[in-house]
Image 1 (tube, rainbow, N blue to C red):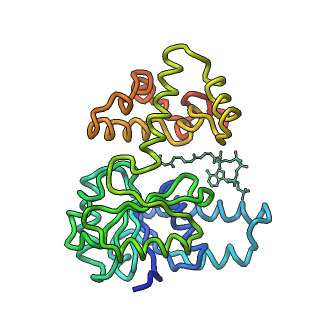
Image 2: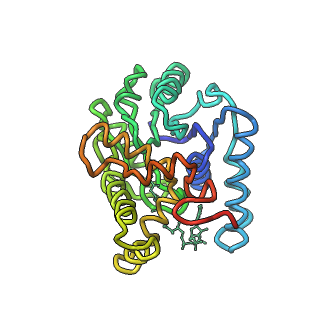
Length: 285
Ligand code: CAA
């Protein structure tokens, strides 16, 4: 069954980006949020992003209107019952995700594929809350979704080869390159990225160098678009702390253990760009 109609659960930073890319590539896309206010906020984010693309001459006004015409909002999972693929990008809480997946399982046709954008939770556990574990997999996008060219496909012990193939074809239609990982904490990218980010915090904590020199080192020495501390501010210190804890819990290896400074910054509410303060100050933005 080809994927023609897409549903996205959650219209936050990741969900809105995912819905934008799907609609832009011509897929009729339904976005679900829990309240009309959250839905409106997410749709506004998409309209603003598309408006900026038109202003910059990266997109025609016609294409923007076509993209917006493909998008529809709903505040109930029932609104996703016609979809061939539902991509869940809700809060990173296992209980909430299990509930969403078991509800979607009871609503959607048998052939619908259910995918999670989780960066840290166990896809196998999410799949086990459905009666279709063969049609559940991970589909992990990167922030900012419209810009980053990669998606990670995550195969559980129960995902069928047909599901993985359908998701590969769909990802290619979105213009994304794919990599395939088995369901282990961090998959491929975060398995490497998270210990790297934690090492940068340890380095700052130990007084090896200033934040600017750590970031400049990795930008100019290795060609990264952002230094690790800038990237932590961009991804969110709270998000990284959460992922690191899950990885440490599972592997029990010191390199995944969040350093004391990271924990204290999170406790102080210094989450990075989103809270106005992290390793750098964004309060003037
Ligand atoms: N949302 C949407 N688009 C954005 C954006 C955002 N937040 N930030 C920048 N862009 C777009 C801009 O509109 C611009 O598009 P055009 O070229 O079409 O005009 C393009 O990105 C480049 O932006 P800028 O020129 O303003 O800025 P830049 O060149 O410094 O690039 C960046 C910004 C793309 C964010 C770049 O710094 C970068 O690639 N940083 C690294 C991002 C990264 O590593 N992401 C992965 C994080 S890990 C993750 O997501 C997984 C996880 O599970 C934690």
